[in-house]
Length: 299
Image 1: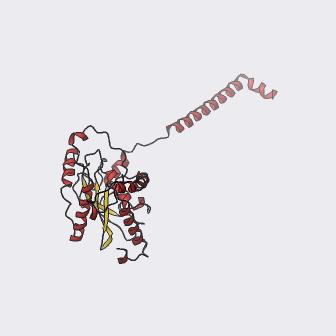
Image 2: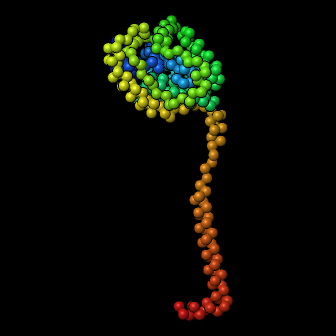
Image 3: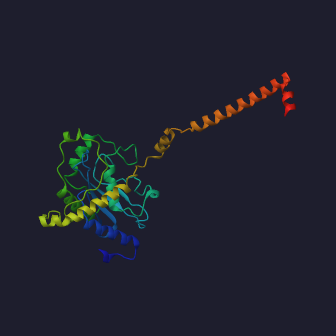
């Protein structure tokens, strides 16, 4: 693939580096690959976060990288119905092209997908492109998402989507019973967990021997360490709300008044005024009684 593109282009060079890293350090939580004829367009699939109504689901999507990548953020959308985000609609998060002011060139496709998984079980709060389905409805969609990959785009795109779906299904655990999620604790902060096998979508059914698993142990530790760093990077990820909602939220913010400093200033001013009045009254009294002249003479 590298032979088809200008390796002197910094965007192309960065994208191919990310592709190499994605293939050499796979994870069971997501898979993403670019189109052969256009490396600026990636197809992906993520696994629904555990201990949530999305657990067991396989959600496909599309990432579009700008020509200025990684200096400008990508846009990404989901193609699989999920009950959390609208399908075929650009997702509005602080790591997407909706908020270029938040984007950092050190972030990557892996960072964006990790952030997306972490954000799925959160409260949408009316953000653009968000849905607020009931948990039971989301569980139904999670089960249905495993049946087949969504249909989208050209035959080449669809072929890649189908291959990614086959790979993700080969690594996906069964959907948990509905009752197992009712009493579960709120999901912890999501961290990407590494896979055990170095496999590509085209070799998804390859069996792993004990020797291969031992060989993969150092890679697992490396991926987990990198995932921890990614989780720290995406901690401030927030949804973007509609302009009207932003104004409403700003109006609802409590006004902080510096009462303590004002009260102290008022107290000292009152004390000073009281002292001044007392001095004036004392002088007036002494003058009227004749003591003031005596004191003046002594001084």
